[in-house]
Each structure stands twice: as C-alpha cells, then as structure tokens.
Image (tube, rainbow, N blue to C red; front, side, top):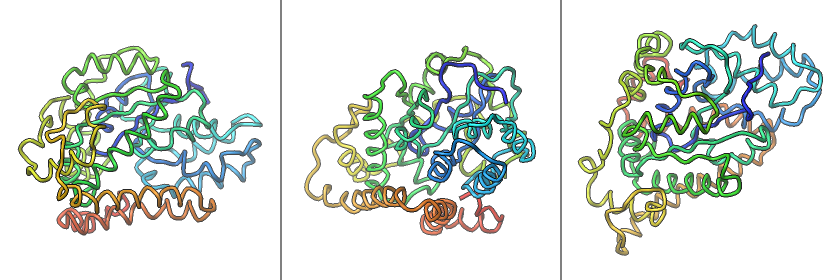
Length: 362
C-alpha cells in the first residue's frame, strides 16, 4: 500500500450540514493528488473496538471488514472489497488502526482521474466535535471548518428537511459545533483552518489556494471542473438523492445561495436565530440583525435550545456505551432518525425515498 508523502496523514473537512462541506469535498475530489470519499464516520465509530490493536490477524481484518460494511453510508463508497482485503493482509506486522484506516481510503475509487496521491482527506460534518479523538489516531491530522451564515444555513436545512423547523434548534447546533471546533483550534492553531462558505463562493480561486497551501498540495485549476462529471454522478448515485440534496454538483461554484435568508425568513425567525447564536455570530464573521431580544423571543427559543442540548448529552452518553452496543446504535440510529425527521417535516421527500427504496441513504 502506497503511503501519502505529505508531512501530515489526513485532512478532515468539518462543519454544519448544508454549510458547503460537500462543495469543498467536490473541489478536492477533482484534485489529481487527493483521495476524499463521501462521508462515513467509521474512523470514530470503529475506534472503540479496533483503535488499540497492534498485531492484526486475518481474523481481525475480516471482523473489521464486516463491521465496516455495517457503517452508515459506507454503501455509498465505491470500493472493491476483495482488493481492500488484499491491501489489509499485506500490511506489516504491528500495523496500527491508523494504517488500517489509510488502507480503506486508498481503496476508494473516485470518478476523477488521479496521479500520485499525496493527501488523504475526509469530509464529515460530525467530526467537528471529535477532533481530539481523531488527533489521537492521526497525530498530525489537520482540520478545516467551513462555516456558513447561520440564517442561510437554517433556510437550506429547512428546504431539504434535515432538521425540525424550529429555528433555535439548528442555530444552537451551529453554535455548539463552531464553539467546539474553535476550542480545539486554540490548542494547536497550526493544524486548524477556519473558512467561510461566503468566501469560498465569492473568491473561489483565492480560497482554494489557501486550502491547498494549508493541505500541502499544489494549487490545481482542475478542481473547478468538478461539475463536468455530473453524468458520472448520475450513473453512480440515485438521481433523486442528487436532485433533492446535492444539486450544487451540477453547476460551477456560484453565489446564487448567498443571503437567501433575507427573502425567505420572517422577522420572528431571524430574531430567534440571532437570539440563539448571540455574540458568536460576530466572532464567526456574521452580523446579526437584532442584538437585543425581548423576553418573549428568549422563551420561544428555549424549546429548540433544550432539544439541542439533550441531543448533545445523548451523543456523549452513546460515546461512553460498551463498544458493541454503541456500534449497533450508530449503524442503525442515524438512518432511522433521518427518516423520522423527513416523515414529519418533508413528507413528500419521505414518500419518494420510501418508494424508491432509498431508506439506506438516511
């Protein structure tokens, strides 16, 4: 197995869903020196069971492959499992969990042409709260957090039905993810890069030059041709999923989604979002419309904020469960939770996904 030649092992792209993480992944996937699969959180999910193994046997590799295939969204990866099995068995005695994970990424088949691979990368919004654990696996890992105006983010989330239509719920998640990531960034600032979606679409060449410099790869204009592969995507992924959730892959980088909140949100929704995010809005580079909220707005924001807090606590509880139970939950719960939300807020999408047997995607 060929190892990356850059001085750090992995680049991780994180951020809230609907904040530009997929766009950034598409740009990097079109780079000839980068492997960056679609999202699947197996690195964190399987760490409890395999993270501390040193001398892997063939039985260990088979067990790992079996668990890997149960991971949420791994079925979206294009991997020849037999070739992966051979790569794993060729690893040296004493290989680490990090080595095994690298082998999985190296086995991913991109639709873009590749030359010498010098960077392995990963796009997972949820990894924003796991940077400490990931750094323990890959000590030289680097992280990019791409952020988006919390008001535009809420509009996009509401449009696709990724969350309940309670403004303070995704706003509290936006706040938590940003605050958690920035706390880690203060410890090792050289390994963390904060980007804004707005800068990426307004100044794409300049921003991607910054990304490439941070990642240790040469800037390549080919990145901006990712949309030319739309026919390949249509063949590999279900058109319904692409049209509902990833329309941006069919068009060049553009500014069409900037400031959509100004037309699509009510004054009350804006106040609820501003109230929930609070002072972190300005710190992250965004200006709230209303600085001071009245008691009624604060009370209205409370249910969403409490629900978000409950979900954060539940995440921490699940992380501390026995390995087997945790893996069972993580392989089934995200899919069921996603379909449950759709059944409430986007019944049209829910019915289409059910009719097209696409429940696996969620």
